[in-house]
Amino acid sequence: MKTIFITGASSGIGKSSARLFQSKGWRVIATMRKPEEETELSKLRNVTILPLDITDTKQIKSTVQSAISLGSIDVILNNAGYGLFGAMETLNDEQIVQQVNTNLLGTMRVTQAFIPYFRERKNGMVLNITSIAGLVAFPFSSIYHATKWGLEGWSESLSIELAPFNIIIKTIAPGGTKTDFSGRSLDLGSDPIYDEMVQKTISGFSTPSTPEEIAAVIYEATTDGKDQLRYLAGETAEKRFNQRLELGAENFRKEIKKWFLNLQNN
Ligand SMILES: NC(=O)c1ccc[n+]([C@@H]2O[C@H](COP(=O)([O-])OP(=O)(O)OC[C@H]3O[C@@H](n4cnc5c(N)ncnc54)[C@H](OP(=O)(O)O)[C@@H]3O)[C@@H](O)[C@H]2O)c1
Image (cartoon, rainbow, N blue to C red; front, side):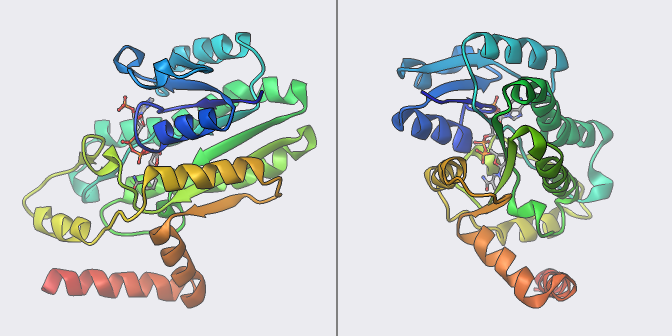
């Protein structure tokens, strides 16, 4: 029986992935900040819940050790993360540090904690949930983009560096997905100069995909045996990335700028 270790399994894409892998006969180590509040996954067979806040470096070490002591681990799914939106000048330092500490450094630290284990086994897979926001850029999400573009570049580098040890790195880039991402998980900068522009921009974003659809792409990436780094997941991710490829990076940026300037004038 294979085992997957998941971060941020309390809701959305992480929870749907936990359910899907469990239903496919995997053992699941579902980690979350508040395990005491989990009522659904804890009832499933072969699912173990462990506490993990990925900004807590001590807890990363202890939880990874506890997970490894439970039996072999084959795959880690770095899913935990959230969005910080707002104009750059309106974001305070605490918001910026928290975003980078979670999405970028948290993911790096969890992965780093597993690398020696995977290297010794000469086997392991790391799946990083990035975003279409790691491959294209929109206004008012600059720090989120910095973390997700960062994860894409970091993952590509690691996928080569760790190849001699048979450690596979893949990224899954979801587009807009109906989860708590744009609700309770969202951190929003605020300032009267920008508020209307930010609201207009955010109202242009859509979330046509379900977390179950994204989990299906994650499962496919885990099991397809392909030497492929990057997986787009969901309608808006495919559409936006294909537009960028067709137009070229510079023309794509100009199109987004045109859309944004028009939006502000209407
Ligand atoms: N939904 C979208 O449109 C979309 C699109 C592209 C990419 N993504 C990415 O998909 C991933 C999952 O988001 P989602 O859409 O499923 O949203 P979600 O339902 O809000 O889930 C986010 C998860 O991350 C956890 N989390 C946040 N900070 C954490 C921390 N410091 N330590 C541990 N866990 C933490 C949350 O835990 P708590 O329950 O404790 O808050 C929650 O389990 C994120 O990386 C996000 O950037 C989402």
